Image 1 (spheres, rainbow, N blue to C red):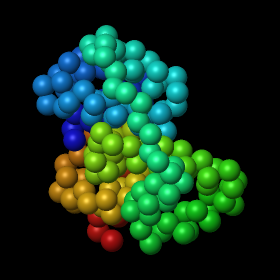
Image 2: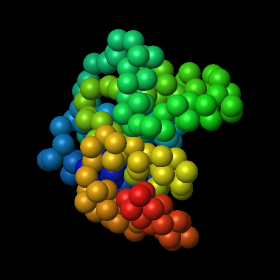
Image 3: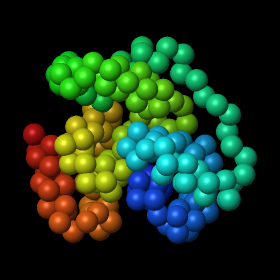
Length: 190
């Protein structure tokens, strides 16, 4: 999971040197599909431009891409994945998103959770731990809180979460460390 976090952090930060260093190192442990999926899913948190640049680095080391993946019914798959991640908070999340804008709710479910997070190639636990790395790197504390809970709901152990978030504390901006640590402790102790 550490290596997925490194790839996702490098993508989120658009750190080409970091990607160029770590992609070959990851290939000894992760299969190419997992590397590709970790970078692709970062689209949700870092946007198209950074994902495109990371994929360019991936292609330098691994020119062959995996075929397109299609999740059957994006809405149904998204609802299922979102329900796992948010558990009892799922209805409240959808209500909050609807209040912001109903299209946001639909895009979140169909695109975010259906088209992207429901894809094969990584387990939901691996996807959620990767999401945490991206959110830490980008300083998105509120979404981190939700996905930290989601990682637990998806089956990531408390020990793995503590280990992972502690490792990534050294990568994030110093002024954010206390806030992320506080949220981690709050969620794990609730």
